[in-house]
Length: 550
Image 1 (tube, helix red, strand yellow):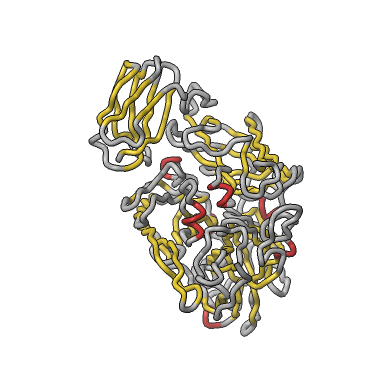
Image 2: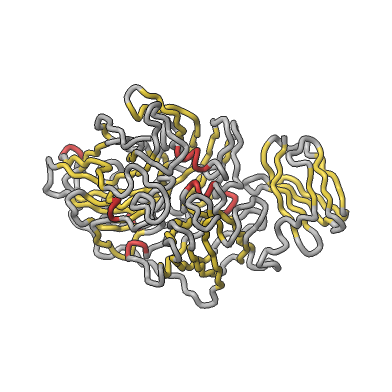
């Protein structure tokens, strides 16, 4: 590997937009020339790299048709969207090669910047590193009434910022992010963006697999942070640098008024990252990448009158929305310990001493309950924890209130290393499911793929077994063969199977039968090839497993 390879300056593309009640996404293998004369293998949605920006209005009903044209299984996770587990795009919502997954839901989210990407266990990093991701812009009436830049591609720009490792000879993307040797914005190395001489809105996404960004403008000017992961902030926050972990988003307002003809840069201030944070100084452990702990330009801004809007935004409101932290009265608690395995590992991590197992539920909660997550990180590096399903508010980081730019609705919290702590509060509203779980995991892709992930069930408030202890995989009960071609054998090992149900990966009931036997056989020839969920109900517990029909 080598240092960042120079390339002729190129205008960054602004992704096309898709909107409406029915959206088609085609995920396929492709190639792209990041370096002139070299075809690099990539994956894209509706193109050769990244994907279109989805525009969704709060309250609209939408169907997202994901057509998997890869020669591999995949998923598509709607990162940050508040949807039911069956629509979430987790590792349980598999899309087999050559098939289409069509989740439908009513948008419930506040205006903010979200994103989408594959989330197949042990393959997330491979598919995302090769380019499979895109932005989602959520709109609502509250944001629409505010005096903010929002003309897409004119004064409102999506910026997907990524670290990458390219092979120094072949220019292929290397499936290893420990030594990232390049950065790009919207899939472009050494790119530029023409911006108007007015206030502009930059929607920043750290779409990297591993490293953090510390964003700044090269003249050290102040900018206004107006939104985080899942909401506008209560008021704009004035900063001159902004840290974002993998998966995090922020919206900033930069004022280029009166600066026509000038050139500025969006920079990475690697020297300003805390020690031990990927992208900064490596600290006590680890091997530095060629761009770590350095400051360099990410994107050139050319201020030009040709891109201006008819009515430029010249000032923004001093207050935005009213984020109210979830009340903690009656909240349950959960403790989560992050460790390296072994303790000084920089690549292999556990949560509460275990790694992800597909058929093991780590805990369950009831719908409409509130839970405080208390996290302690004993490992040598930070972990950006992402929780699916519902937004949360960060209560503390290392015992102190979070910075103002992180006090809105969030779906990622960075837990600092070497004994660092974080607390968040989360309410599990609107959705429950006794089959499909939500995930939580480190959003450093290699950590996630290696098992730094867990899952939890949000069950109906009337469910009689809120802790879920008996709900997943009593090892004495057998379901075989798996994968299955013709007949599925069920053995309750002395427990009477009262009822048998088969569900699709989007939660649709396909088969139901009363049993009243301890052993039985199901003819599954009627099922199409693919993944399914089998639920067995016994006298006082249930068992849900995934099986593959060949």
